[in-house]
Image (tube, rainbow, N blue to C red; front, side, top):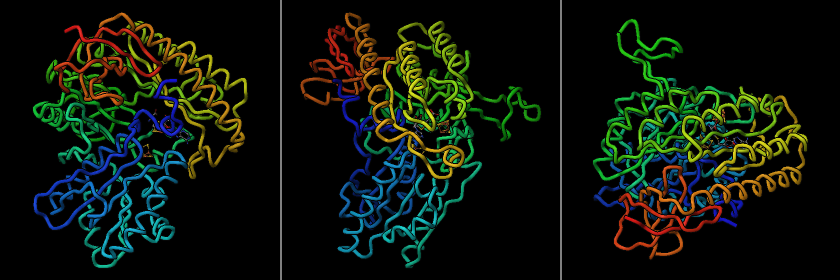
Length: 487
Ligand code: SAH
Ligand code: SF4
Ligand code: F3S
């Protein structure tokens, strides 16, 4: 079985949290007196936030360290999406306790979604914690650290309607030097009934496009060759030069300036340089427009891959989930993607098994929808009730754990068969690959991805990361394409 979905721990992550290693701060010695160690859990947006936090603290006289034992301040940037994600963090806090016994001056801060969800409760539950800072409070961290240095417990979980950290240049952590992530918006207004994100990240707001373009150009000049534009729902990106959100007009009457929607932003980033690949995640099926699809089609360097989480194949369950589309509507969207972008365009998904009251027949509808769409890959989860969400308030979490797991297993098996089927289509074809580094298994091989986001492994020869190569794919597994270079 392919490595992507054979590891149960790995599949318990979503597209935006699909990193196998936990990003931590790098070692940096510029002679500063204080050392910060930061580690991150959850989605790519959280990882990006850690890069913002590092940038803020660097200005405050901190060097970063990759050795936790050398740290004066430990930050853990947390995720609340499923119960398991929070349990992982609690375990780490136990370990930090041991470190603090050895070093009583150590400051421990909990950042991110768990901090936002639990607020001061976290201080009561975990006595090791000195600082609690939500996702919109990172500019206040220097001040919170000062409070902690004075022996106080420091909390800021204020959620903003404006904060996008647009002016902060992130310090890249755990970077391969080739691919980078840029947050283009924050928060989420969707309120899917199972999801904690709107409570932990606040209202949706879009970032000034000029700061996005500036950042993308800067990393291109530094040698990066791929950017992924990040947001919980990138297709609802909507920059209004006057602030606020307008659905219809595209010119602001007061300023005469244009509103920028996602399709336009995508085009602006694509135009920076044809050698800069552009990806984006996540697309909510209700928001991805023909405009976006035509823009993807128009530019060679916009990757032909859409992460389009369906969550369930049953219209009744989708209704309970408040996803705002049903099975037919979703399938129509998939057909439109195929019409405009063709059959080679990668489509991937997230799936939740065992949502409240899901029947066996409704679960089978998820399997049949998967068969119809033929996803290239999926991130698959069992439903985990999150306190405070609409589902937790209104519906019983009534599917037994055993049944949830069995359904998840069936979804995984289905996806593996589909991934293999989709990968077979790529054999005997030449793919353009951006090299990201060594293959996981051998230093004689390199790996990168094709436009559809599939990992391709090939012999190293004299190629180096950051280069584009053409690879003839000769074989595959469900997770990987294997080939030889033909350039
Ligand atoms: N904004 C993205 C998803 C962000 S969360 C979107 O709308 O697609 C990533 C994935 O985690 C979701 O797509 C969903 O499949 C899963 N997820 C979210 N809440 C969950 C919960 N309570 N239990 C299980 N999986 C959940
Ligand atoms: Fe959660 Fe739905 Fe928002 Fe995605 S779109 S972050 S699943 S509320
Ligand atoms: Fe991301 Fe987890 Fe928060 S998925 S937005 S870090 S709850």
